[in-house]
Image 1: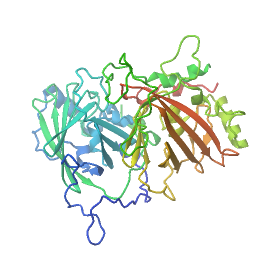
Image 2 (image 1 turned 45 degrees about the horizontal axis):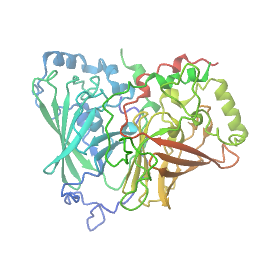
Image 3 (image 1 turned 30 degrees about the horizontal axis):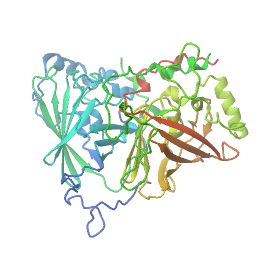
Image 4 (image 1 turned 180 degrees about the vertical axis):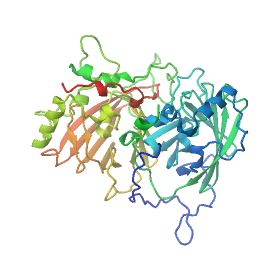
Length: 243
Length: 266
């Protein structure tokens, strides 16, 4: 259903960017070292795209039985199989939320500015703000679809902590649940110019018996720009989902 | 139906104000009593240009109904973008007919009711906050409504020759003195410029001139050049006021949009 509103892909964003390292034949050199900022840390700026399999199944790389469900969560996950209860996923109503937002198979753009890292998503034409000005996570955040995020550097990793995510969101299209106790930790690791991993840790003791971590791979898409994506423009599936 | 009841749909999904967004920001000039000094000069970025960054609200220039102001206190231009123009907007005959029909139909076909994007003009008149972030080569506008963003490229790239039509269009900006001049084209048909239904067609281009006159005030002059819908280009000036020490909240129209189906034709 997330695919319902995919815009026709347009050809008009072919924009050679000066900061892209190039091979002798002019093609982008995606294996060049990651660029670094004045603080010596890797710069995450760029347009990226995540391996699409994690939207469908956040545990795609895990073995059966490795997701440490609490009993109620296991049951709810099973109840959601086969598209049943798909209509209860906020994304079916064009409401994006974390952590599925990161895993959308459309490009996203990272922009670092003083005190903040922004993520702009082509999917839903929406954004996340990650505060890097040293503020603490709020004690009692207003529940929000993306939660409230603060980030800091640990060596070469950009580490983002997010709490306050509305409990209605699903972790993936397969229907893995979470509760209001969810504390997400993302660890962005840019390995070279063209490749990054996001290590995503799900820490939600109400839903899972212990924290668990997945590694999602992201690749850079050079020389392009984001397009407009309007989910509400063409969302025809919701009415047809079995309720 | 009274207009503020019709506009109730916009109010429906208003989030409860949260207390945790009172976050005193660094870099805000303050009066001796600690309050932000909104009359102080506009801040500047390292390259000496005015910095438009901040959370901005509409200027509330419309009187409230007798029962008090709504949460979503709309400005005059929300209803009629040409409110300040002598003689109103210079509609082409078909456009004047369209507006009349849309109003007679109680704005039933307003893209707003379907939670579609507002487009760049109506975004400024929607009584929710916008956050401008000015970085090197890019001015970003983050909108509270639908948590949607708009990019204005200031890295010198040209406007695309044949852009894919979109609600937001494709925007480039450059500085003329202390004014950021933004050119936008590539609109799709079907955009409303105001709640009266003033149309914008795909032949339109829009020029915005953004000037931060002091710390607390942003002036936006908008020139709409759309010969299909208007007999001549027209210009309106909007004022936005800084909301210091806060940030954007979640606002999803689709989350709680229940009024659309109940709107009648009259």
